[in-house]
Length: 367
Image (tube, rainbow, N blue to C red; front, side):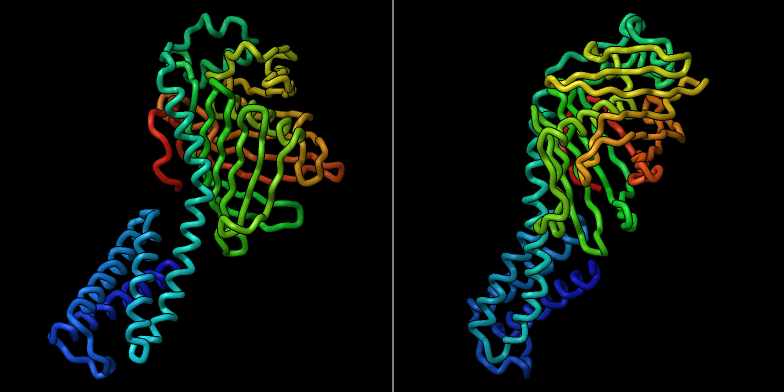
């Protein structure tokens, strides 16, 4: 579809040059029987250039290609009406261009709230002092958590007040096929915000989703063509569920954040700890499992809601394949599993591609 749209834009643009060539007597086309005045010929030229510009922007991945394309369609249709007898068939091409351009515009509108939330978080956290995390910051933590933070390489590095992560992921519901997606996420720990944006294909059709955990609210909004609702949720249960997810992020993606004094720890054994994390008056519990290397290998909570069923089940995220991401060692692969009465069900697979701590710039574009 990408190449088809590019071909239509290019061909439609070239055809508009014919009107310019006829108006200035550079070439006569038998198909153009009506006279074209020179001022109108310049409009044909401008329209053709706009279509060519739109295809260049589109192939370059510039999101605002749709604005140039829609301007070209408006001018083109005006010229077609002026020369209906010769050019009426161009209306079909304009429609074929206008539909994806409008969908791209809707996609931008859907992303706008995410982008605005991210930019606000970036601007708010830029002034936070970059203190280094020291061994003294670890003293109140259980021994398994201390080993994990040392293994992750956070000691001697700046304390984490925000991060940006990018994933390749696959998700599914029970009885459904896997859905591949590109994900981008920002967390801001000064106000405990989690902003998670995804782009996916649902049966070959484009979809986008925004999970937003901010203030005392949490919401999920997934839409086909960024327009038609596929999955939506909010409310108290969603906030509890996403508080578990926020704490899971701290354990998996930002180990340095585990020095947070709001976390109450209990040592179970040499490789297991119990944690209770409180945010905005909501307390959730989770059990963390480590191996002999100091790696976090699993996270378990009974407080997360399965939003589809609005019930709490045992929730685990086994982690593996530790790699270096800058100065940190993190698990690069994780799964999200519900433990239903009829057995465990893996509904999410996440491969970490990149993580940046305390980013200074906002969204530059999704994968």
